[in-house]
Length: 100
Image (cartoon, rainbow, N blue to C red; front, side, top):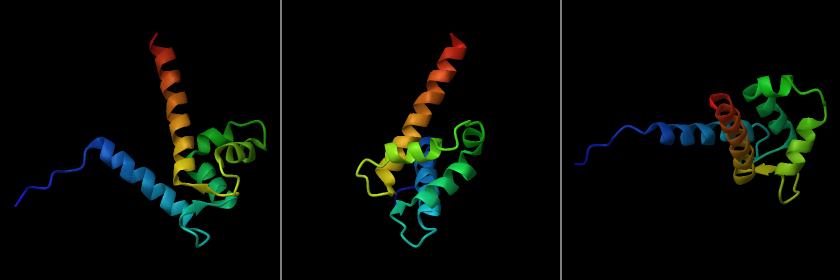
């Protein structure tokens, strides 16, 4: 029997992203997408430092509209990943600017 290895750091990160999406997407009973309320709960809980530093109270509404590529008022997992990817890219650029 083959020995099952422990998940890699990257695999654990992917599992974590899926788990977080499912945690918030399931709050209204429709676990495949994030409603606006679920998105706001996610942003305020998981990315509180980002949301607290925003001067514009409508910024989260604009972010959701921009991410909602099919304009259905919900964020599916690929749309959610666009947010995560964009934030990761911005953090990476900030980090690279500091080391230069």
